[in-house]
Structures are given as C-alpha cells and as structure tokens.
Image 1: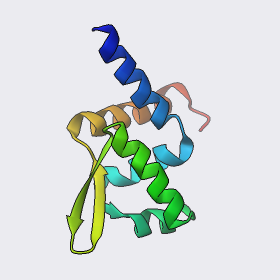
Image 2 (image 1 turned 90 degrees about the vertical axis):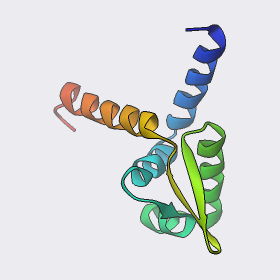
Image 3 (image 1 turned 180 degrees about the vertical axis):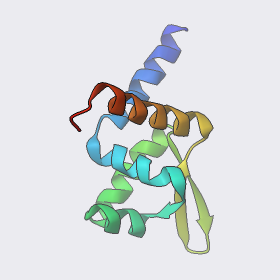
Image 4 (image 1 turned 45 degrees about the horizontal axis):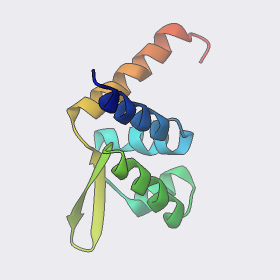
Amino acid sequence: MSAARIEILADMCKVMGDPTRLQILLGCLDKPQSVGEIALNLGISDALASHHLRNLKAARLVRGERRGQRVFYTAADAHVRNFVLDMCAHVKEVRHDV
C-alpha cells in the first residue's frame, strides 16, 4: 500500500477514534438517520451531531441522502460497514469483560 493510502487510512481511523463519532457511525450502519434522530439517540445537540457528521463525511465514512428538507446518513459503503462490524466482533472476542 502506498504511503498516501496509508495516510488516508490513518485519517479515517483517527476520525473513528472519537467515541461520539463511532456511536454515530454505528447507528448509521443499519438504517439511515437524520441529524435530529442522531442527536436525540445520543443526547447531543443537532449542532454537535452536524459537526461530527461533517468530520465523518470528510473522511468518506458516511454519506448523506436528501429526502425533502432532511438529509439521512448511512455508512458510505459496504467496506466501511464491514470494517466497523469486524472491529466490533474483534472487541467481543478479545475483551470478554465488556
């Protein structure tokens, strides 16, 4: 893998390193969610949810789809979804106490 691609991957992992962003990404794996739904589910403001979504979008981890006046966010693609699910499975295997 080229140095440039390693840098991109490191940036993606850095974005996912924030617990709130990771929760947002996990929530968007199964069904599209609006900013308001994300904020409500996590107990954060719409503005903070939007801020985190901008970071996730910039890292190409989520994508938005406009439906009327609202935008619904999902994992950017199957690769992102599978990576997150694989890491969740890995945590379950190596950390039996959580």
